[in-house]
Image 1 (cartoon, rainbow, N blue to C red):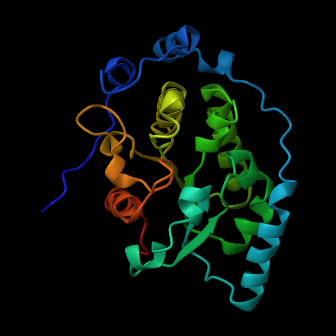
Image 2 (tube, rainbow, N blue to C red; image 1 turned 90 degrees about the horizontal axis):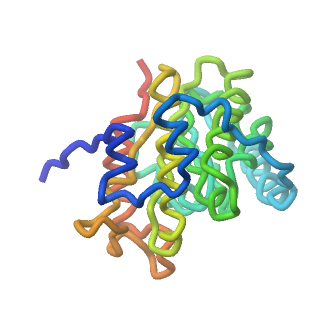
Length: 246
């Protein structure tokens, strides 16, 4: 059966649709409507990335044994990337690199860019992060600011690299945070829509059932991480966004 394409609704539809949690932050809604986001961007608090040092060292050790070929597609971010064990099989014909480290936030990928981004010289980066950011108490505006910093960091060394942001997913365990996650997705989508180097991949709507809530059949028992069916859905949505060698 041929999958139907998924499209991100207009900003107003995202905010007001019965399938999307109501956005509780009136100020954020006003910023979306009036284009006042720059006035609301939060300054990211100091972030300690040292807890991931051991994991990054392991990546570097693997690189010394077999360095990935340049011009590949780098998947980076939190546990939804780390646990994507079928990544190479799901995207045959593409040189894919998995550098996900579970529990990480966007700030962590920024911090370690010099060690697990720059060396690979990828033609495209697929980022999944923001989920843990919101769970840690970061605002949608801070998630956007961190994403923009990630883009700036990457572009400083890899000006031609395309960056694709996989939308923060709706999950059973974190459904109470879905309003803030939806806000963050809208903010990142709007920025991506204005820059040809950026790409927003909407997996939010496809992961919702007819009741407007996360589909249980896509998750492991923890209600947070994807099962094989969840990754199959992601694969079908992400694949058209990947850049192949010319």
